[in-house]
Length: 313
Image (cartoon, rainbow, N blue to C red; front, side, top):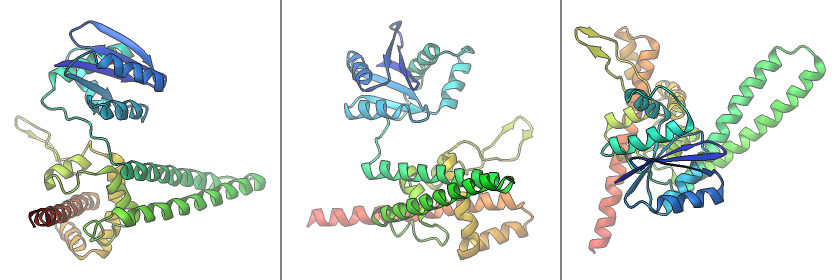
């Protein structure tokens, strides 16, 4: 097995091959990516490790996966922590590529190959991302409007806000239409889980129903993690996970603890036991996610049983 690390930026792909003292660079465009593919195919049983770089790595990932090259996308924090653990404190694009190649070899049993999303899921993810951007811009412009005194500038800001609200409404309509085709009854089964939450889960959590409740909670970042050493036992805290999905789950849970009887009772019980509001809310976020995961798991099991029954007949 040959470990290959690729450090990605907008303009360039820096490549390192572990154990071969080979370092090359390619342009991060279609032609450069094809040259990269040809280069990687020279190494049998290559394992390619790429660091997530704000989306600039997506084209390379898609190309390599389509050509059946084993490739994994790694969280930048994990890559940097691995480099520090090996004693590498300096940081350049070439050094990062070397570290990724080494990581591909050292952690080969713990890394998982990248699985390309289904086309509808990839499209929905783009719509959800754009909606998040528009919502953030509306909040920013609203704050600026509130602190602006000049009447002409206020008029400009008012027109901008009107256009943004119109775009958000259009995005909501498109997202709702896409969810109609793919959101299952399990995903709609909790009051408070609206179209935006459903779209976020569909786009960013394809593992729902395929993992245990504990694993899905950790994946999203709502599982309390230990931080103990010797006689010291720190309070459990959540961290890591998929932050954008967790933010959407937070908003859905705020609604669910008002309208969903199970979650409302759970929240009230935790507060009665003296838990702080945010702690109780995070616990409800985790419970809501675990409930959805279990219902989706049962749904998938029923679908498999039905398909096996049809095949048997």
